[in-house]
Length: 189
Image (cartoon, rainbow, N blue to C red; front, side, top):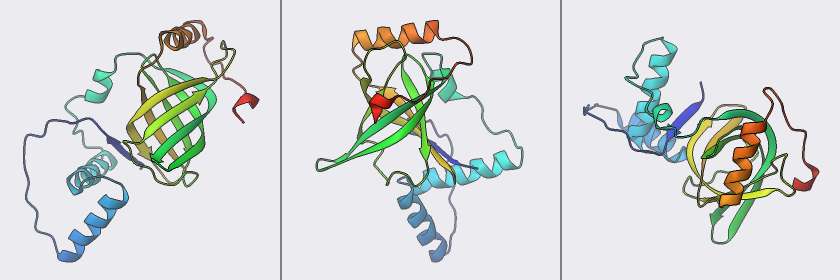
């Protein structure tokens, strides 16, 4: 099962205390650091994965789904992420936009294809909407990351979207035939 985590705070009502060996604490700290998350978040993920694997219902509600303001549509749009890792380092990664809405997009890329980056990094999504003359460059923030052995998925939320870009995305979503996909765009290369 892949890793999923959200960058939005959730309300926690109970506190549990655990006795762990020093080796277990070190391993948890290392794993949490590697995944750029807290030990508490890692433990919650481990427990959630176990409960899901055992078929035990634990979610009172799907708060992430309930918060969604705009409905998403399945697409297949080649794109590029430009990730500002720090003031001196920028990385480009080829991605596939799998879902898109007026508020954001969900993109995937091959695991290991990009070096690790901080979730608070500045991100730009370069994507050509079929009805646009040129690729759009959209400022985004990562709100969700899912990792498994094969690929990484990133939920992006647009930041400061221009009205004309929003209108173009809205027209594309409204006029897009069901089940259609888009061939690779040579202008992104």
